[in-house]
Amino acid sequence: MMTKLLSGVKDGKTDKLPHAWLFSGPRGTGKTSTARILAKVLNCEKRKGIEPCNECEMCREISAGTAVDVIEIDAASNRGIDEIRELKEKIRLAPMRAAVKVYIIDEVHMLTTEAANALLKTLEEPPENTCFILCTTEAEKLPETVVSRCTRVVFRKPTPAEAVGSLERVIEGEKIKAKKEGLEMLVKAARGSFRDATKFLEQVSLFAGEVTEETVKQVLGVMTTDDAREFTDLVEKTELKKSLELIERLDKQGVNLRRFAESAAEIWREKLLNSAGKNQAETARLLSWLADMDTAYEQMKSSVLPQLPLEVFVVKVCGGGQQSTTTKPGPVEKTGVQETAETKPEKKEEKEEKKDAVKPEEPQPAAAATAGGAFSLADLEGKWAEILKSVRPMNHSVEALLRSTKPIAFDGEKLELEVFYKFHKDKLETEKCRTIVENAVKEIFSVAVVKLYLKLGQGKKKKEELSADAVGQDIVKAAEEIFGVEAV
Image 1: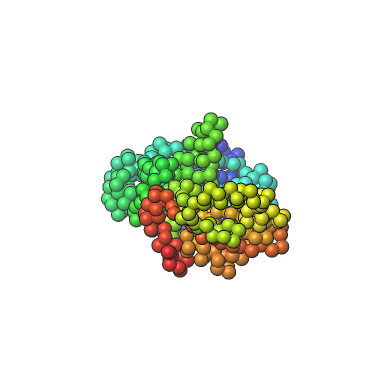
Image 2: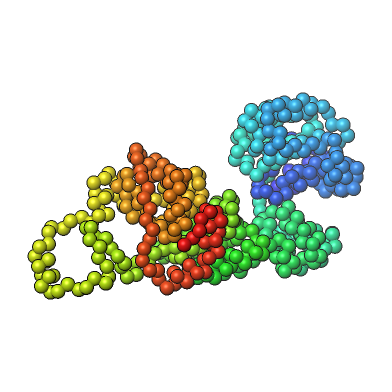
């Protein structure tokens, strides 16, 4: 597209060129670099067609950033109306040395509304021999009136082959030793950014000499696609211990765990698209995992231990924090009389007498607690996801704790949750956490008073859960550090 637009330069008819350009696209795709090249095209003294020579004085000054007639402005730092008014005053001045005065405004979407409107006036009536190049990653935030005054060029992420080809040109010019597998790993780490890929190449070559898969992993701490696939396979098999060990290994290697979470989510997203409409159970499971992974991903931004939200996700999915429903019953309190599993069997005559004396069915304690209220446990369960979402912006840690609890009763005033670890219960019982939970429930159900009650889960755990607890010691230690309590 740009080649066609620049055909006027080839014929020496620069007055027919657009006076305002809008370069939009993802970060690191070459928008600002292309703007500088365009400035060279417009001002090169020895260009051949539309190719700047990169040797004349103007080309060298533009490359060095010292050309007085090529002005780069960071709109993120100069976003106000006063800065744009000052710019309008300077625009009136003719170029000092260049044929065309070029203004490159980076991150132009950061301008205030007033500043954007002031810029619009200049774009509508541009001075002679002046060119504006607006660069942005978020063109949708610009006023439509500004966009309509520009010739728009959309930059897209390169394909892996294109990105590798770009790096190969760099290593050829800089005489860097590199293997193609190493370049491919750099491209994956850069996630479609030419700029990041070039920076990574420079970093690895500086510290390791040759760019190979191994040196890239050592210097950048990147994970391979195999790591993400191994993780998703382990989670799907509920291999709690191995999943946690993999996270710990990657963390020690310095891997960016948020990027790792992105890769795992991409794998599950691909499976979700393949299963949609074919396997309803599989689709539901993947949707649940992706939602929980998204929560963990957001929490990793502010977590004291970046790996903790990912570990909590694994424990939740693999069942390490759940209570068995098949365990033998322990002591049960019923109508004020404590019965145990060791109670002796009643004689046949006693059973017959009691059978005759049985009264009409009476509600169980939990049912009685909810029957007289305006809401029920089913109402709470139906709104549970909404409650978690409401708690999240107030405190990520409280939301994570709530995800490991089980609602067991609610009547519109009394909220009862079952927790499975004492340090979870102690933390939720603090005034700060209790208030956050109660306020969230009050807001969701529009009630005046909510009281939170916590019950520590009872009963023996399944054998595999006991094993899961043993291998989850790293998470317990992390929780102890965050919450300042001792796990029991």
